[in-house]
Length: 402
Image (tube, rainbow, N blue to C red; front, side, top):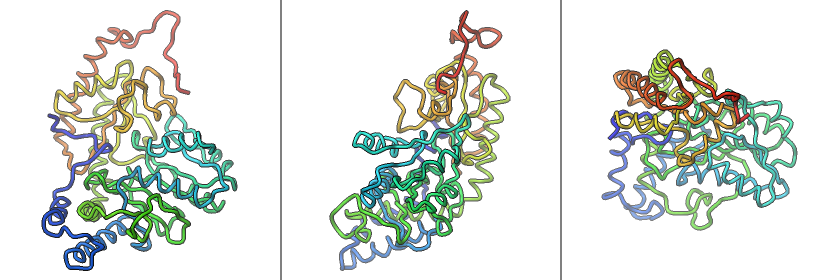
């Protein structure tokens, strides 16, 4: 079993304090928060506290802007589908080519239903062209949905500026901030962001709990119909224990935000520099100057990422190749393809994503383990010789995902 966990962009361990906060709400305080008796009212007060804890981390103006959902995917779908219901005559959506499947899969389905989807392209570092974006902001657009940070490369997008531009064009703006919340400071009350998605299990809360931030005054239609929960905006009895766990996780994330951007970043840089110094023909993907402090995605040329992961796992090290929600495909990830990463490197990308629980001793162990793994795999590669990469006569290794 892996004992060094570097796959925190896929999911995180629940903080012990989060579990401790949740436990009473399984066996002791198990009432329905909508009930008038003491079994329910106590739970209701705990949910109100959790809502304020989430509000504080997001920098929201009011706790009524926090809607609890089941996950980031539900939050994303709710935001986009709400805008389409609110503006039925607008048949266009703007997003990016590197969004999470929670957004892209929905957009693909909506495209089949007659909507026009504008997928903003990215350059070789995963950056957006804001001039292209500005040209697409027309009265036909119902919503813009752009992630705050890419889950594979960690690249940060200029969502605050993009939200301001959308607001000026009278278009709703949503951001999938699943990877950003708890890692970078967020101040929604001073932004033009209308809706924002959160997933609990990305910040040391349990799986199965998420948030949709909805700025006060923004037009909205719920995805679920039923009871009065969440002020009628998300029907269904609240997952009380998980909501309370998420609240505690948000409070802890706020306490550790400096740690994420100093200690965790330093460990990420130590890992990255150590590998790059020892392994030839590898490079960092994405925008190395503007990315999450915990994320490092390295492309190792002429070998397969899956083989790297299996050998790392044998040494007790857990990492990933791309998004956990798209693994299983033999094709390089859509993010690598969108950036035009050469075919010889796109198959060998490994994402290392750290958390505040990682130590320098763990990082040093990974730095020592990676170079011999890469060297051994390249010995078996038909594209690697004694002196480095080789080419078949008449063929060159050119990018095929431009």
